[in-house]
Length: 501
Image 1: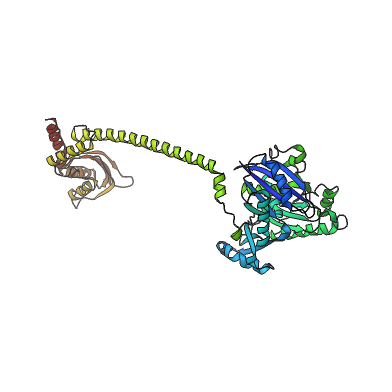
Image 2: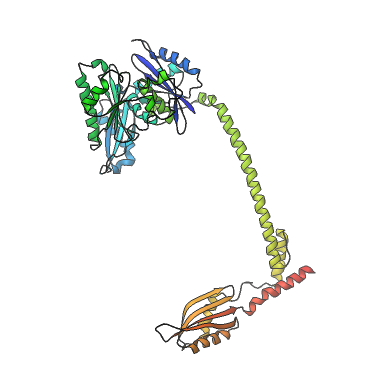
């Protein structure tokens, strides 16, 4: 399982969450935080925290995020006919709405599936932009502080949507509004059925209470109404509080009464079973404070989310990555080598069995055709050449099914009314079911066919009267064996006798 670190840097505190992620599940390993002085570079604080984490094993990745206030979160709508050209059209849409040149920005986007019927005629996209220089500075600072190149860079508010990996019921029904309440500012994220449908940065936090509590509620209402407008009036069904201000006394009841929605605080007890089993109880009680750090770590463990490392900031692995994983690559190479050897051996065994079957088949065929069994292809070819010299004619039967039908048409006189209902020729046996005017005509058909040299044992097996008609239905059987068909057997006997001598 990969070990990924989520790094959440704020003005007064740095928080780190470590998760172990596999193909299906993720487990939170630890959560740590440290205070940050007003003008203290966050690199110093991060280094101290990373030293503590190094004891737990190798770090496979570090994920950090741009503060939501430094990002531009935009919505774009395109006709369904332009779905395949969104990558080319989106930059023009963003440049028209943003106050910066598109060349100075890095952006990423994800499609928003329709939430209601009737909205499928448009393609909705949620795009996230940030200044290239700000993202690059964050990458450099993170690399210097942790010793790891951040593989992905997200946006703090949007990372809250990835908490559904730990709380599957989050927004599973009606859309849920996640509010990270800070001291100076807050961030919101709307999640519906595991998909982030919007995010916003609010300039107010718990320090604004109680004087600006009304303004805080107004901003939350604006966020909810804006979502309902874009989502074709699909309302938000619940609110979840995270962040250091989530446990402020009376905040939950105040929001619940003001918004008219149920308000909950994310707790470790309500998470997926076993998600926090490695975290001490005293740390898991503060899980709401590490919501953003957990979202960033889940971003790296699952490899999904809004990644700002695009274009000129794309992440590329160098020689150091290969050197670090040389033991793993060596083990994979040995596994592939043994797999190749085993596959070659298995293929050889299969070919050997096929060869044995073919040899036995050749013996049976040569015994049946030439009277002498042979397992050697060259010897079998010599027997066949000897057989062809004795009997150069074509060993195919002189009369086939089509020839029998032609014979029937030739031998019957023109004045005989005759219809064929069924004509069957199988392995030298001819069966005919036909219609004639009288029973005497049926006997005449058998007599005419008996005159042909290739037909023998011609007999009428059944004659019946056709219902509601004066005509007669007959069934006839005959053996088909032309004089020329006997030559292959005679030649075979001669070949057998010659081989015996």
